[in-house]
Image 1 (spheres, rainbow, N blue to C red):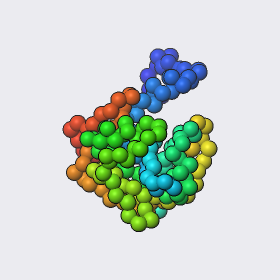
Image 2 (image 1 turned 30 degrees about the horizontal axis):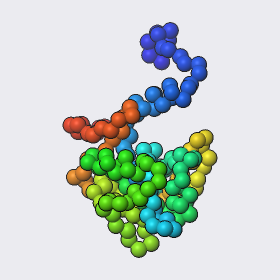
Image 3 (image 1 turned 90 degrees about the horizontal axis):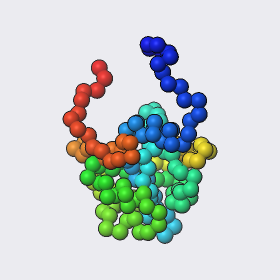
Length: 175
């Protein structure tokens, strides 16, 4: 610990609101998780996405337990993580809404046996579901990366403190 321990406020009861506020200080990217459902393409906006393993390549996504889209994606056994670009805020909002045809007017493609890939995404990851874990009000899903592509010229759409954001000036990474 640094400094005087009496100056550090200790919260003895973590509330939903205090947790949401603290977690909101962590900036994340935004993705759309997509798959082919029994009646066509399905998808939802997801900010809880992370790399899990480089060797072998694995990712992790967290899905709200109340998602009505997840059962269709789970049944497909595979999905695509579309990392949204800074100019795709409207897509993020569209895929965050429940119901309706989320793909209306949206450019996308789907390779045979694959999952929908949204046009203009920064990158995409075609994934096969490996495991699902109960995690409170969410499911944590691990998936093997089967294929991927990235457009290094696209900047990501970010989410911070309940608002959309974009990268400013890039800074050098760790030495």
